[in-house]
View 1 (spheres, rainbow, N blue to C red):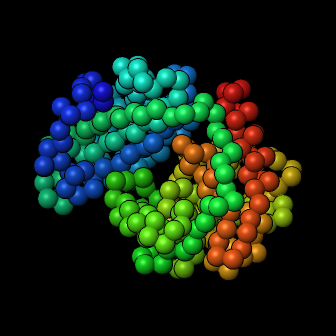
View 2: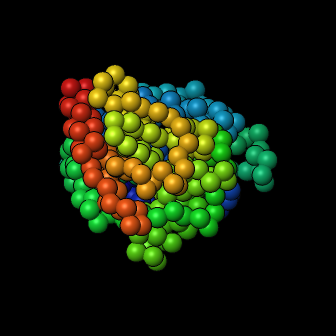
Length: 283
């Protein structure tokens, strides 16, 4: 069962119109959230990112699109899907509706849908990493700037990058911007650890304004064991790093095992993950 504009319907009944702007132009945004025991993790961060993104895309925001409204709609969707147990992955899609060519019609009204699927674990896990291989994806580049960081449905680079990774037996790839700086992984933000220093690309480089990225930065902000820096990462820095790890809301932290001939450890990532789980339990 899915939630289609507030109505719970069977998945095979829900149909998106051929005139839907999300379908025709990628004129849509989405949030992927983790729900544990009836609680939407980091709901406020997801909601305010969605609202900020709608404003950047000049979407009209209906008066009823409050945080409480989406919380109720998500939990309503979870409740009717009995197979979700206590942990679920939820995708909330918001599009501009129908009408117009590139220029939307003034009568276009935003629509939303919510799809949920089960997750195996209640808390974030330490994932196997020794055989997790990455390389640079250099067929196409992201443009620096905040528009590249929107979580929109226009993900052509990530789609073909994922195909490239599979064809070349990589678990993931690191994406570059047009300045040849590393921006992120195909499915999450990137962190680089060298000694006691932890570095992640700034939003201005074109990386996603990740919700988990924000959580990690918040955890590290007052930690005396590390210094944190938001700065551009050169491909040459990968060979000198002690650790590389990828973050997103569903996986939490995925450590990278190797980049070309370089091997990494995951000590810092494990410590951060433990702190993250403690924060979630206490929250």
